[in-house]
Image (cartoon, rainbow, N blue to C red; front, side, top):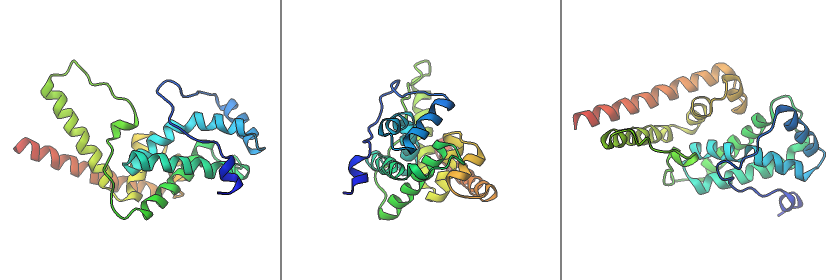
Length: 210
């Protein structure tokens, strides 16, 4: 392991409610200090973005262990290259781009699909106790069908859907993360939405016929 790897800040998941918050000016200050080699400033950036990045990568990879490894490698690469960050895009956009590229590398290395992790694992979801048991069961089944439909998409179509529809990035931000023109990004997103919609509608039709 090289010097950069030994000195890079380690990452671990932050428990719900412990993630740091910061205004744009504060984050810009942290980025400036990190670019100058301030390890503490970069560690604060890690705490600011770790959980959200993990949620994105988990939804893309479908595997908790793999997602953790991808996030760790993402922050390692970001630390190694932070001095090259020019600020032409937002820091999180730059970070997500590294994460997306790491997810692609991991996907290419993996020959078989791992056991899928539910999207609900990316964030705590509390069941609505007001729902009747049957309604809760049907909602759970529908959510599982949606998750399976997303994970069945080819990676280059899954990513646009996760970034735009799940994480709520703007089209411009998500296209930048994927290093695509907006027209190409919209085309992939449209196809992904159609595929997921068809899969979910097929699930509902089969459930209603049973």
